[in-house]
Amino acid sequence: MLHINPNRLLNDLDELARIGATADGGVSRLAFSAEDVAGRAWFEARVREAGLHYDRDGAANQSAVLPCANPAAPTFVVGSHLDTVPNGGRYDGALGVLAALEALRTIREAGLELPVHLEAINFTDEEGTILGEFGSFALTGYLTDDKLATPRGGREALIEGMDRLGIDFLSAKEARRRPSTLAGFLELHIEQGTRLEQAGIAIGAVTSIVGIRSFWLTFVGEAAHAGTRPLDERKDALWGAADFIQQARHMVRERFHPGVVNFGQIAAVPGAFNIVPAEVQLALEFRHGTEDHLNEMEIYLLSLAEQVARANHLTVRIDPVSHCTAAPSDERMVRAIVQAADQLGLSHQRLMSFAGHDTQTMSLITPSAMIFVPCEAGISHNPREKCAEQDILNGANVLLQALLIAAT
Image (tube, rainbow, N blue to C red; front, side, top):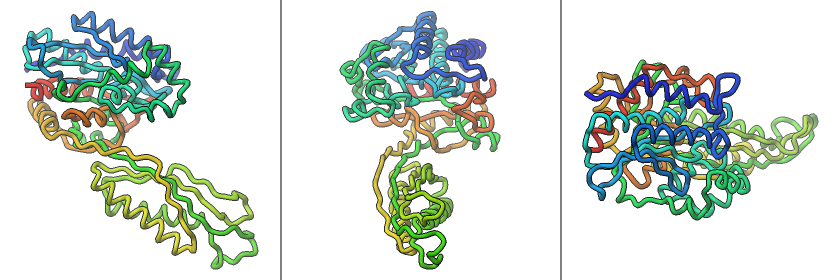
């Protein structure tokens, strides 16, 4: 059975981690930054040294390509991203790109002939320094004018960053590929959670990447003197919001496991010690692995907000904010991951990803799935992010074998 070169992959991870290294052991290689440019140059050099074809599209996605004998064959893509969050870790994204590169090097050195072209890709700005999943949106044709007009990092910063990479809005849109040119997509990633570690499982076969829906809930009551208005006569908007939070937490835990709910922001008006809150704005976000589950959660949560408001003598205004579609994995790709783990004698389990990844976007146009490996204490987006060497090698070898299975 074919295996990747362990020392080469580990050395690559060590070398890349020096680009953008921070004093406390983290990495800051923000998309479009000087460190990102340096990381990209390093990756290009590794691709050329490996004797693979180097390519870069109009969205600055970088690729190592191993062509097959048939020029008209579709391309099987593997990879992730090299950009990081500010002072993040060395494995989030980078592991998936460098393991993909190593898989192609291994296949080339073994002289294997596959019926598809192979491509190891580094997607631009997955982490969202400026836009988020910029490169995969461009490749799949979902980089819309609205996204380009209102990037969360600011349009001016996007224009400056694109200029630094030598791309523009037109070239990014021209990076779009036809689904017929693709054979599939696989991504290796650290779990960024504790399920695999706690269960002592080596490999996670991701069955779905959760969808995310968010709303602003505004509970409206009546301001009153905090000392003279009796408790049973108050229309306290904060009491209503707090009541909703507790009931929603219980509902999601009991009815929608393993779905999750979060309340990341809350603001009371007028916001004084001695005034009963007249209005409270609450950020509601919930996640699950299918659109059917998300639809059901939305109905129950928003109905609950209205019920709680009435019970507390309040009204509630509900304003949608965003909607990220759930992305079920392709079952054939999941089976390839499971088969690869079995061939390597590695324990595995099927699980959802509760964080977004480029796989979520790629699944819109081609069969896609993800491989998870454990990370210590589930810590990620943090200088203390750590993945054991054996888990790195296990994941890379599963990626290699799953690629060989799925691509033939």
